[in-house]
Length: 244
Length: 244
Picture 1 (tube, chains in turn red, yellow):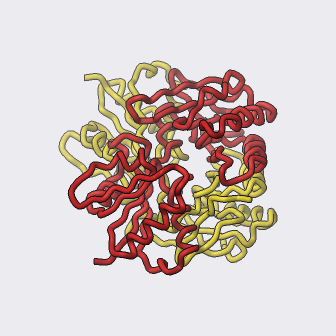
Picture 2 (cartoon, chains in turn yellow, green; picture 1 turned 120 degrees about the vertical axis):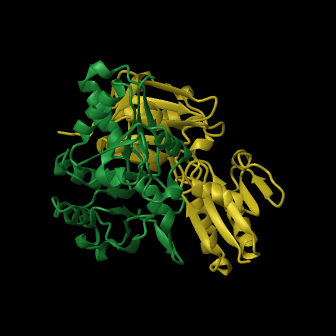
Picture 3 (spheres, chains in turn purple, yellow; picture 1 turned 30 degrees about the horizontal axis):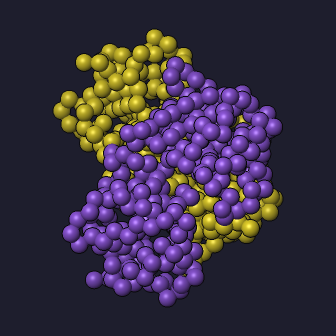
């Protein structure tokens, strides 16, 4: 049997948000690789080997997955959300570029519900107008690039989805990001802190940017900053479709 | 029985990309509203009333859905892709703002796989780094706003997902968008034309921006312009995770 490598998105947490395509891939897999908390979402069964790994080992994990698939495995790499948004898909293609001996391994990428879509749906429609998505982690890019993008995004009046706003190893960046947006005149914009979306401990808070504090976010939080038109209606938050 | 209004995303076309949450909502609905081609994706059954409508009638459709739910219906408004991304969710909250008599109608928004995620998965990982999504339709915003956002997005070095690039009533805008990006120095960037993603007539073409022509896109095409680092590996296109 020819080996295959599938890069699959598990969605934000709830089983009800896993696509049938991804469920089918998991059901026929021989090997599952991924960050340990995501691998833990896959039910063990006879004939299935689980390979949980640590957070910072994306490239090594990608190489291992290619190797297992080249040896004939039905290999699935799992990401939370969508694998193509700040997750494992780019790492796999980077690994493939570095290891051309695996160029004939059949690869499929299966999309998933990424955190910003799930968070937006819970609060209304804050991504209903033009928007951008920025990874606030400076592990793989200089902080200056992040600041520049935030300033330009504010000037463009995009709604801004911020992934990975804050972690124990990066406690300072998110506060600086909020400061950059305040300097850019976004103080009155609405900010949504969406933590553990669709999981049992989900928590969502909406405040103005002026009221936002760095400690409102952690590793499991997705932050959406509204555009200048974003507003509330009842308990909902939405971006109007029209701009004059 | 209390009426409810569910705003659901059907994904880009394939049944394998419809979430279980959305399938469950469709299975218990009394009324389905939406643009005719999306309503046509829902199987008829006894007790289910289908209300297809025309493309430009979003606000009227939203009001009708609120009214049916207020009268006790289990009402589902369907969008293609994700309902929160350039689709029906914003229109419903706009209608709710204008019709406060419906403020007690229970509303749920169910996310879906939006076109850019499905398209990105098919070609690799072109959204693996920071990106933005811009609706190129100028029905609800001035064209000058679109041009300004494209220029700022190029300066920020975002990958750019363009929704609704071109239609019969707007034949000119997309060519201007390509010209703006060329002027901004993006001529060598890769551009992905993803048409009818996940449907039987799916077609994907990747060229450089300099080679891109307006007629490569139509109403069913999602266009992704890579960032300055986006590159090919074998048949795949991806945005590297690292920026120096």
